[in-house]
Length: 163
Image (cartoon, rainbow, N blue to C red; front, side, top):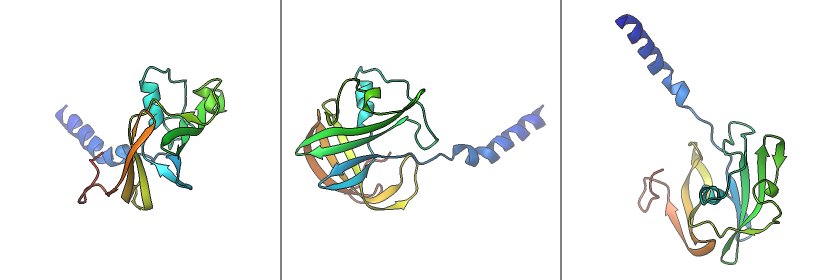
């Protein structure tokens, strides 16, 4: 019995690196100052967490477990949802899957937090998103931009909090 238990334990430990590997997730994107950037924040999740029902979304592949990819824009000092690609049990859908009867751009008045926008080229792969040397952090309160700052890669001086 003990020998079997040890064999199972050794097998589990030996296979654990394979089990713990994960797929880097498809990023939301944001239009800012005339350019498009990856976005390492998911503002739409706050919408779902604030009492709005999450539609039945499905993962079209392992790189998109949340079931959607959102396109955001900062226009003036406001955050807007510009587009949404969502996957439902019946197939690919757009904004109507989450915001029936509404048209883009949709003011993101539900979002309060920090938008984490990578700057430059990816430095190393990481899950759920690659790591970059610098990040532009935009503070937002109820969809209103409150400030911006550039921070170094996690672990460096002036770094972001760890994930």
